[in-house]
Amino acid sequence: MSLPENTTVLIVGAGPAGLTTALSLAHNRCHDFVVVDAIFEGHNSSRAITIHSATVEALASINAADGILSQAIKGKSIRITSRSSQIFEAKFDPLKYHSAHPYALYIPQNVTELMLVKKLQSLGVQVQRPHRVVGMKQNENDSHITDVSFEDGQIIKARYIIGADGARSIIRSIAGIGFSDPEGPNPANNILDRMIFADVTFEPEPVGPLTLEGHLNGTVFSGNFFLLTPFGNRFNAELTQDGKPIAKSIFRVGCAIPSENGEPPHAPPKEYIQDMIDAYGPACITSDPSLNPTPVEVDQLVWSTRFKTRCAIADRTFTRLGAAIFLIGDAAHIHSPAGGQGMNLAMRDAIFLADAVTKHIQVSAENPDVDDTILQEFADTRRARALEIIGFSKTLLKIASLSYDAYAWWMPCSAASVRDLILRILGGFDFVQSKVAWGLSGLGRR
Image (cartoon, rainbow, N blue to C red):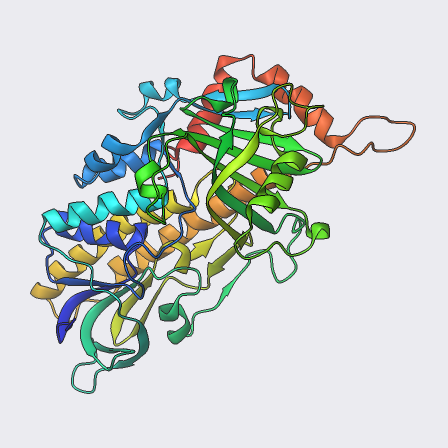
């Protein structure tokens, strides 16, 4: 498909960050933009599943929340459990005193993207696919324009370029921007540096409180953590990749893989997922009769993936190569999925960026020599917020990965058992539950 020769704003990447940027620009009545993506629609993997209250509010502010709300499961709580019992529950209901959206939405990332694409299409905007950026250089005739070249030989001249093209961002690479852990090359707590996510069905279908829709369950065991989110039949059509209908309830499972277990396979097979569940999952979904009086086994493996959970942040998220160049989403910062903050931060960044770019375009129309203060303030503020979120997710990961090994023979208790005891006690206080829900919601750190 032919691309236009010129655009004011070029958005590279059509994940949640790029799509939200486009919707926010349109909401701000900036319509001279192009969205490109390197892959065909539907070829992306689905990882993130949680949209927190602050992000729902932000999407609603640009009239982009309705489609997602119509599809998502409204989450009631996040639970922390042992393999056999509940340790702590953070209920979202107290957020009703602070937000019109007192819940977390549980919805697979590919469904979120589908809803955002449909909203864009209703505004007459199409994502241009597949178009892979291979180069950028300052335009010879206008020092505020960059010529962006694509793999197929096409070139777009743009005044603003938004790199929303993921953790391996080509925009970041061409711009020469570094990307590293803020703690340095050898960060602490790098034991659980790989994760597996999978969508599965079970035979027979499991029963018990952890299998009910509306809750994200985190099981801590043996220095590890395991995630379980029941989807019911809500997303069966969207999650099925081979076209074969699935009638059973689908469950999202995720688990950190200790480094001593070796490198997990690229797309873990059914047997690997079963072993992972039996080793670390809650008792109600295991096949081990010593843990589960009604054993269940993985029936269908709908999808699986592995990835590294390292933290990194771009040295800067705004620069110039003729055009103003920005990084958002995973191109700007990555961290562990603890707390479900990554996609949420990306989408809120996108809305703030669209506001800043729109203001800069308007001021530039009146004064072509305007400086970049508006753009730099955005970049500095959002990078500081990203550092805060990285620290938050690292803290959660450290707490989740505490070991149950005893301190010493003369002190037969462990850091993890102390953690569990404290959480069980604190979980009885409503104000503690409310504080945890507030921290996860993003309402205090938009």
